[in-house]
Image (cartoon, rainbow, N blue to C red; front, side, top):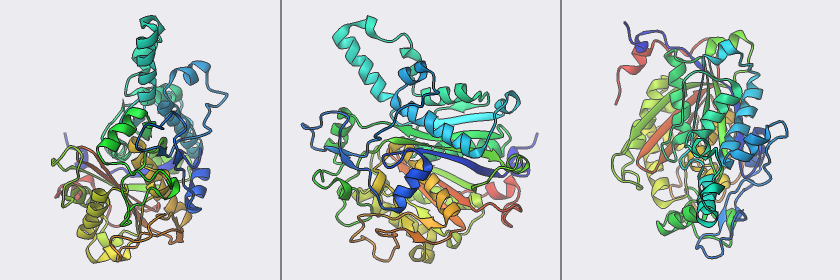
Length: 436
């Protein structure tokens, strides 16, 4: 039997997006906030952070489960899973997708998280310690699982295809979308609901990341604290939320008259195999992931029109990401706009890669690039970081970088949808056989 890579490659369309974030509880509200340069970072309100060295984060405020959700769903799920379900509902609605039993068998769900339902687990640990084992919910074993968001989304929409909860630290959302792309390409699914969710703003996480030196301590200026690529950056800021996309086999989307937002054309992944937290000093894993994604898409480095960067606002990540971009894009690096929305959203950990990919897709849809706010004194003055204000640019090809603790690297490449495939598209074989 021939490998799927020897068969014509099925195209992957993005037809729906959903976002829950600190600056908006829908894609429309979130995108409007990004283009306005509006920060979601402020003093932590979810718990008393007075005794911690870091007292700021980008929390999701004002979120309440919709009235049409059953009470047991709203009551039982961790907020991270609730965020994911809300984002999935928005994405499905935008896609105009009706998942009947027949399509349900061909619909997959890949929604990951780095920390999982941490808040719910912590609450149950407190109940056990203070009130005894009888106060642990009977549904604990199911809803404390790391895959609860995926499980609930599959149950809610009747998605009976493959499902999994992927965790690649801060690259989780991008990895989930990339692996969802592969399911469609090789014919294992026709629709994939993919993305990431996170609600990691807890006393333990903040304390641990602060002790590790990863968080900025710029508590007195929350909105100016996250400073990707700026010389005065001093660490990342925790964020929360979810990002979910609907991926469809291209012909299915065309036949049903869906509005196709973009073509997901390339995915590359690689591991540093260097350190538990620090990126490889030369960014070799990041470079491999970028090159693989571009090759997968059949895109030359000089054809990339915009990069939505990982851009965490940490000293090492930003420096190494810029070096990797220069190494991969060569002379085109100084002509390619690069921005980081973590400057406004903080670091959404497992949700970051999905939300940032959606921002890249939005740049294709709207022709606008979101800015990197607080980039007052760029470390590399030759790179265009789209500082402070958005810009009209009308990109044709965009790239989204995601890098995580443990050396995880995942990169996605999207382009404007054309009814005829790009000239470089071809069979799976001729686009996969050479791998750096």
